Image 1: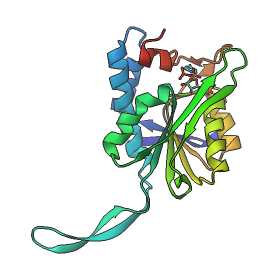
Image 2 (image 1 turned 90 degrees about the vertical axis):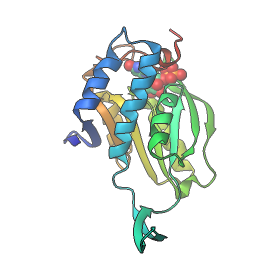
Image 3 (image 1 turned 180 degrees about the vertical axis):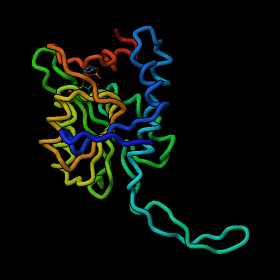
Length: 217
Ligand code: PRP
Ligand code: URA
């Protein structure tokens, strides 16, 4: 896979691959069914996770194969945490767990106020020892960046140092906010879109991800 970077957003990586681009086109299509939307979200997430975890540190463990004893690579340290931003981030959890089934699962409930576009927190639960783990925040949409910034602030308040963010579509406005306020957080996205509209929706985007995932339009 190719990681596309842009000097304007030094910590944002567009994971470019024909399968991701094809599936993203299907995801954007307004006639895509609820069932297909859920499946596509999960499949794209799996491909993003593959790239977003490529720098996870390894150690070695001695194991016995049927023929020999070897020192062989295994992931080092505590299991990572996947942290979906409710609701739409829930659609990325199974894709993440399909590659790292032992990952811990936190939850953060954030609702974007339609008038102010500010995130309102209604739930937050992560493992107690999250400061010793790598936390992967998942949300399909990086729009103004308010929701994920709030999630990052809460994690940092609890001493979490290793944070990555996985999203499906990013706006330049959200990417600018995140790269300037949290330059230590790597953002992995399937696509950097053109702009936000006056209601804070990403263009061309894919609409309201939570509503399309849960059929609540
Ligand atoms: C959407 C989306 C993100 C947020 C992005 O959620 O899933 O969480 O908006 O916007 P931002 O970058 O401007 O903060 P929403 O608040 O609509 O909640 P929902 O997922 O429950 O529908
Ligand atoms: N939230 C969404 O679900 N879609 C957008 O385009 C922006 C925020």
